[in-house]
Length: 450
Image: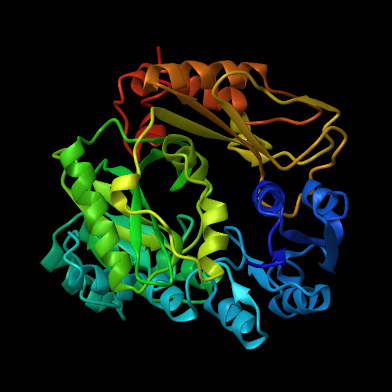
């Protein structure tokens, strides 16, 4: 097992990983930008190293600075968390070159599964259902028009190197294709430095369901069931739950089997997710794979009892899983909502600032993963998420009631947060009856006009 691990991230996920290290008796090394000197993760880690100015490209995205910090601190491994460099194959390569274990899959696997067109081809080989789409990269607008005619409108145009909902556009008709193609390409270049696109049939009002997988370096792969992630705004998830109330046990097992088959085909080790879109007839189609821990991983931990971050570390150290698929059982229901320092009334504009006071919710079935504290000033340079509230119960109804309670109890003074907006969703009839999909926020399903 590792003696010392550097965490190449910030905020609540860095805090989460530091806690896992402490549980395992591992020394943790935090990295921080000049803007994050007073951040919680930099305060609670065993050691902390400044890696550059506030701008992420000069600090949290600076591979050279992070590697130097790890080597200088005597770390044996690096945990990338999510976002930033977590799915960057060059970062995994740099770790290997410098004798550092990358707590995640191999560079080759990240490259394969990070390229959506390649991942789609591998899914076909693994026998995973896919929506009809292009055979690979769509090079030109003329090619896109030909594929759209074959696939049939509406079509979705997606960045091959995409993630986080960026580089995605929908063309409902031929007249919309040119603008959608050019917009997706330019956004992909701006966000990923890669304008390559592929296409697939657009599934109207789908549900977004992802399967958590975990594999070791000895060829063992299991799934830890699914998460319901359909409540999204502009492809960004807001509320997640496990298991999904929409699917039955037969579909659950089929999705899990497909996810495991694809992970094995990719030679995957570590924690990852296989994401699916599910239509109203409960047909599921492969969407993409995320080769990292997910923001919403706590709901899976709550219903399975498996500590995914500790398992990531164990697997990276070469240990076997030590259990089989039959050993993993679902226990109750869990729901998570993200608390962001942003103002829903002003088009969700970020609202950084000083937290004059705060109260963290508690009570039966409640978990809070938080990256801030009383008196902390939230910097304006990074993602606006400051905390995650997770509730567990024996039933979905109990988990929902507990999460509603926790949101009303959790208080932040001095900043604006999205908590009231999240509570509104949880109080809605659409949420209670599970009558929602990935377009429900845009369609006004949670807040219908009176």
